[in-house]
Amino acid sequence: MSRIRACLFDLDGVLVDTARYHYLAWKRLAHELGFDFSRRDNERLKGVSRDRSLEILLEIGRLSVDAAAKQELAEKKNRWYVESISHMDETEVLPGGRPFLEELRRAGIRTALGSASKNAMTILRRTQLVDLFDAIVDGTKTARAKPDPEVFLLGARELQVEPQHCVVFEDAAAGIEAALRARMYCVGVGSREALNQAHLVVGSLAEMTLDRLQVFGYL
Image (cartoon, rainbow, N blue to C red):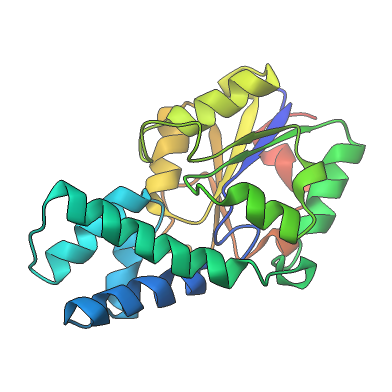
């Protein structure tokens, strides 16, 4: 069986709940453009890049704009989002996130962030998680969004660990597909129904321990 040497984590919805900040910023943008944007609509944005999220938003509003306008809209949404996350602190780390990362570090399991967010470093600093990662791969380092496996393959490369020795923690179907395409093990964090392609699904990282990683091989 494969020896687990590294764990790679998505950020939003796995370690912190910034999803609501994204949703409120996208909803504000939609209202400014003259249409509504529901929480159900927001589900389509999970795990995809900012540019693709904007495209989906415009599709929902049945709007077509040129490249310059798209850039302006994306930047406006991001300004609103950054303003919101600038007030985050360590209390916004989701249950189990910090203890599990600390347990992995004590056991010598390497850790990486694998997120599409271009604001990942801001969030990690605000929540005091940055020192718990050996590598951070975010939207500033990647060209292809999930479900492309690039973000996780880059993370494994930075950790100097082969993909078959990695476990990914993800809350979005696109992220789980990316992990599987990278030929890594995958733990879904959230709904079993929505994340049924993962090898294991937990409600939160509060359910994770080193012992539960044994399902993927010996430690």
